[in-house]
Image: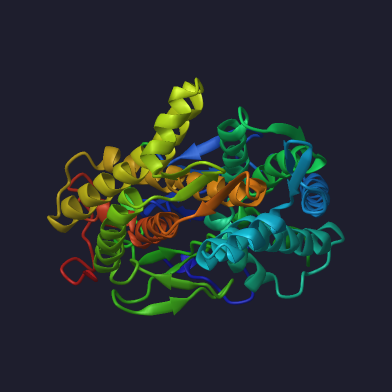
Length: 212
Length: 221
């Protein structure tokens, strides 16, 4: 029992791991790349071997950031009718919905498609940048908690599918013209999905290893 | 992983932090503690898990009725105006020959919320009765609910985009209608409901782990 007690200020790699889904306790062991450990009792994944280095994680996060900025700078698609063109960015859509009398939906879309993904990317960039240079990231713990809290609420991939459905619905009535935004949103979907697979618990281990 | 019998952290007087994974001494059954490493709140079990899950789930189920009965958007042309509900949108996609997308929208907007209601009711009732029936399957069911829940937001984003793009007054326009607000609320509420459910409760009555449970009889529900 004595060795399990957390000693303040000194946490080596935790020798124990508790299954988040069923509370079973296991001895942690080092996994080979690509391996994952599953809970014996509830079969949930306990942890995976980290598959990317800090450098790769940072590179992916920065890519996601570039995609995010560009995806929001260009219109996503344009519809044409009788020679008139109508294009919209994500913000354009949010503002249009606000103006059309459903502000709640505008707020929901702004949070899940803009602010939450942006916050995720910024927080990961912040933390990984310091870790990359073996520095202790300021506000590391609150950043980690925020990342954990935001995870279920960023919905770029749902928006991507929504775009496809929306365009199919109107494709017979209007001329469709893809704008750069649609490709960049696809890029953002892929990179952000990869970024959010980073296990927050691994970042704690990384911090211990890299910042002495 | 090992052949040894599974022991629950609670039975060992331990508790794992959900944010950083640190394993620490457990707080008392009703006490909140803060993780010494990352400062996240740590509970032996989420407080009032079943009560808040029921409350959120029932609110979501009530709002699900107007979300499906009321139209979510109005498509207007020079000559006609047509109100679309979630279901009529699926039918329209199917009639226009995109049966694949019709299936996707049907699954995301109609099946997933229904499935979530049924799944959460099953989990809540079985947990409240202290059942140890099909624990592994119930645990899996919970993970599926967590994984697919937010895809129901699909129709909300479809309306958002169409409102912005189809804006050729007076020839053609799309207006959002109140149904979409109810639908968005249903999705958010079911997500909150599944988050407030503590899956560890499924295992607290599992007879297969024969530990002497220190806190048994003083659980938080």
